[in-house]
Image (tube, rainbow, N blue to C red; front, top):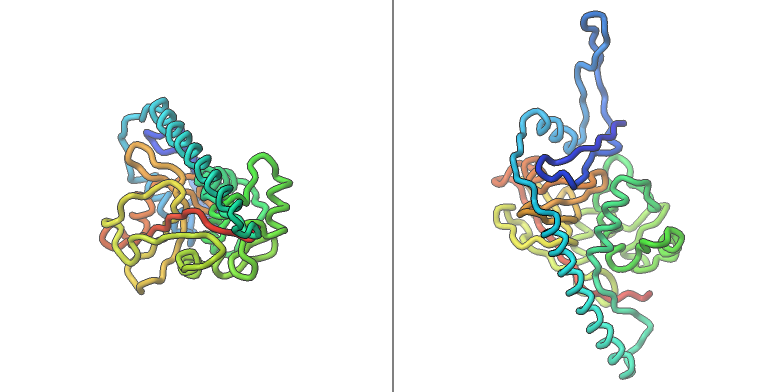
Length: 289
């Protein structure tokens, strides 16, 4: 197993890495010393990383972190004000006799990002799907976190939320320490489920489905992106979570990658003429608890 931490040149504040990568290597004796002669792995991200280290050169002026942080602060303040308005509206609805057995929950992309950044590298409280098929399981956890399942100030509360299936949908969209549903951990069932009309559960809206990435616009933080190369319609292979947009560059977090440029992801999936990426944007949704 190999773990690597690295940085994007020109973005010194963004930490990234590849973790838990299974690989094989061969040794060769050179001038009396044993040296690694070759490294082989089936992990497409690692193979792409190796080629980028050798070939790709990035020259980009550093972005002003003060301006970036000011912009983020303004957006957060705006969301806080919107949340206060929504809370007042919900109180008015409840006072009018609307059932309170269910709760309407906003989608906090900040909470989802905090979860993604922490657990892409750290040991998770949820199970991990074996054989590197963990991408959508991790994405469901990020969406679950954004709807309030993850408590940033209390790991004990987060673990309790997992065991009680808090902010999940019983029998349909759920995960835990021992396994999860198909809609929780599989790429295409996840897309179908979050986009369908329903009373309870995550509310997503897909965009750019079955279109080349070159037509993809208006990505936002907190969105889920799914990719495939040329092939069968509606059969996508990978899921990832948008965690940062900076200096016109979009970065995503995956189950074994803390931060990755979407441009890297596109090249690893055939380039702009062969890579299909669709997005999912989430909004307020109802949950039983």
